[in-house]
Image 1 (cartoon, rainbow, N blue to C red):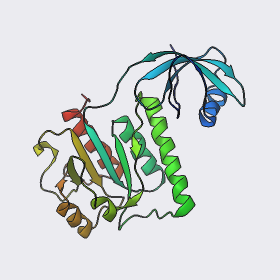
Image 2: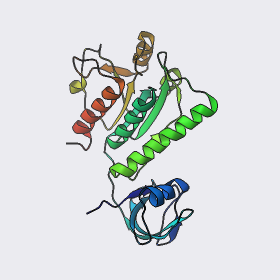
Image 3: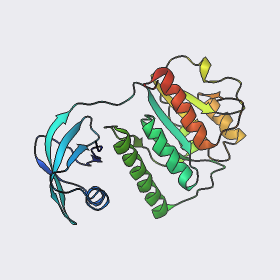
Image 4: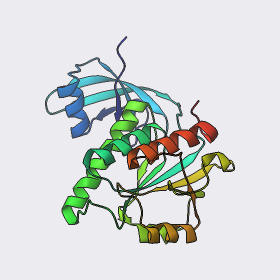
Length: 243
C-alpha cells in the first residue's frame, strides 16, 4: 500500500473547506508526485494535528485539496531539545538539521563561531536561512511531525550565550571528563555544538561561565554532525520517546 503524502500548509486549516496549496507544495504534488484529482493527502499547518484531504484540482498552475477530517495526532517528544549548532559547510549542515528534526528537536539555532568557515552576509544569508527552513519542513513532512521545529535567528555565539539557557545547558566536548550517563533527568535541554573545527578554548570557557556543562560522548572524536545526532538520540532514548 502506497504511503499517503504529507504536505505542510503555511496557513491555518479548519473545517471542511477547500484550500489551494502553496506554489512549492503544488509543484511537489503535481509535477514530482504526479497526483491527480481524487488522490489522498494529509495536510498539516504546524499548529498541531493533521487533516485528511483529497485533491479536487490538479493542474500546472493550481492544486486544490478538500479537507475531509481532522485527526488529533501528536508525535512530539516530552523532552524539549534546543540544538545550538555551529554552522558547518553545505550538506553537513543540511544533514544535521534534517536528522535532528527527525529525532525530535524543538528549536535550532545556527551559530557563528571563531572557527566557522561559512561566512554569509545579507541576501546570501537570508537565502541560506530560507533553504534551511525548507529542509526542516521537508523533514517534518517525511517523519510525521505535525509541529514545525522552530529555526531561530542566525547569530553569533557571544550573542546566544548572552541569553538564558533553556533548561539544562550541555556543551559537547571530547575533552570533558564526564558523559551523558551522569546527568539527572530533565524535560528541557540545550545542546551547544561547535562547527567542523570545534569551539575555541575561550568559547568553551565562556559557555561554562554561562551555565553550560561539558560532556563527552565517548573515547573517539566525532564529526560535528555525528556528535549532534548521537547526543540527541541518547537523550531522547533516556528521557524522550525513543526506544
